[in-house]
Amino acid sequence: MAKQGRYPQELRERAVRMVQEHRSEYTSGWQATQSIAGKFGMHPVTLHEWVKRAEIDAGHRAGLTTSERERLKQLERENKELRRANEILKSASVFFATELDGRRPR
Image 1 (spheres, rainbow, N blue to C red):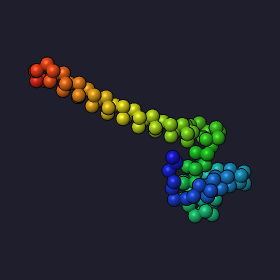
Image 2: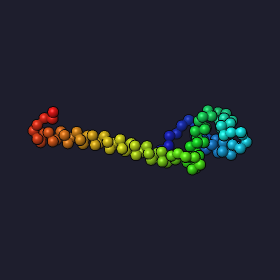
Image 3: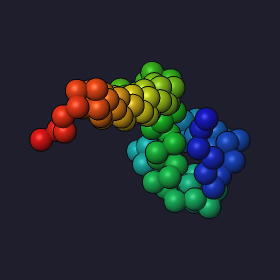
Image 4: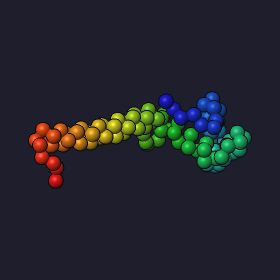
């Protein structure tokens, strides 16, 4: 599930689309981003990050797509849970081994 920020998704998409459509009217992409961000009342860096993310998702820029990033986060959480479960099982096996053996661990 995507994180919802301060701005609605429709506004984000519209601002990104405007930067992409009007980029040729400015001397640089950053100038286009600054101008359009001002019109929407947001910080230019915020809009710049959205534009970068849209370019990555469209395959125009190198990097992990949004879906790949979400999948990676999911796998990292799952890995963390499995490591924790593994530690619990190791502790339990030591406990039961010593109980059955009758000796205390050193």
